[in-house]
Length: 495
Image (cartoon, rainbow, N blue to C red; front, side, top):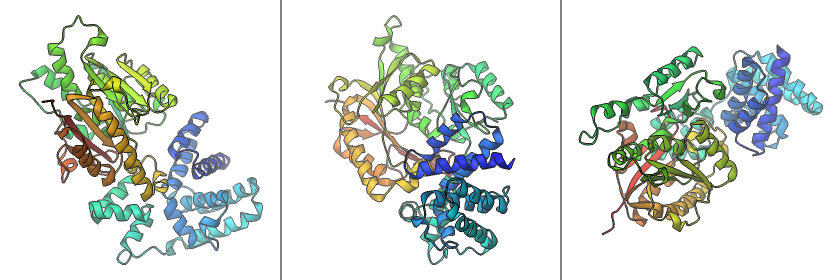
């Protein structure tokens, strides 16, 4: 049993070293490792994932603690020793099922195995001192140093804590910090092509797998706005179906019932709301009422462009909502990203989605005034998805926020031209930074011929409170979603 755990610690050490080198985000490295060692049993995978995720999430806090028991500052340690000590400290402080003695002994063994025998005594001394004195750890004073206290408690850089305190207030900010450390269930979007019996059969199969599917609370609260003059009772009932469900115990998504058949897609509920807010569902219904059925597919009216589409969740959702009444052009910067979009579209059996490599900063006159809807979910600092990509917090800097905002302005300066007069552009980010969100929406309205419009779905009051017209904000811990921002605009009609 202990040898298996030892193997998992070695795997975790390798992953954490790769993440510290900046090879890739920890969650991507984790997925790649689990795919590579898919034969491991569930307990080993769970141990490995808990350790790798936990050390990444709590890195700042762990370093703060280790500084109290080490004669050498953490930043001056050898990377391997630093990662070993973080792993040992995390097991001692947060993994009750692991004896402190095992955390110490296995760290020492790994140090020796990795040719750091001369430092194994140092590793042993630090961890055993922590184990003996963990109840005496000195934390920052909450009253005297509130920002420092919250930074250490929630392992968040002080500059982010201070910025959020100014934007959201101390109480709401602490709630957000706590939510980013919580484990959230997986969210899936059911395919629009499933009829009622197929949906029920899928949910029953997922229940039998122990996934406990539950309607997502955001979709329970945000119902499609009714327009009696435009829809009948049957259509209204169809639109009120819950598309988003949460799943527990959903490791190994590719093996779940319905996945390979394209019965569902993995997608955060706030991301789904971006597409719902664009009103594509209603546009498709209106198009169906007026369009001649004999028209060939390529001439059918609606055209949606997703300018930064990878991995393709929103583009695929838009293609489904079009209900055969139009096409989606999904673009992104590299061929690897486009391959991923195409694979998702193929699995979901979408014939009306075309994926293409394109730099969104470049002009494209062929698309001028062609799109009914442009989805602009642009590159951002990603502060809203730190619950899933924990090491973002250690990579982002105040300077990088300004750099990414400049990139967003460059892209918006190009893609607004794709929108037809009277068409819709939905701007979105997965961040919680005003400079990239509300300030960017205000800049867009000042620069280009658009007006703000209300989202095409009603949203919980918490998403709209204090937001400019046409904007919605999703905060961690409030609606069961990532941190997200949406702004809806309509291009002015030509005079």
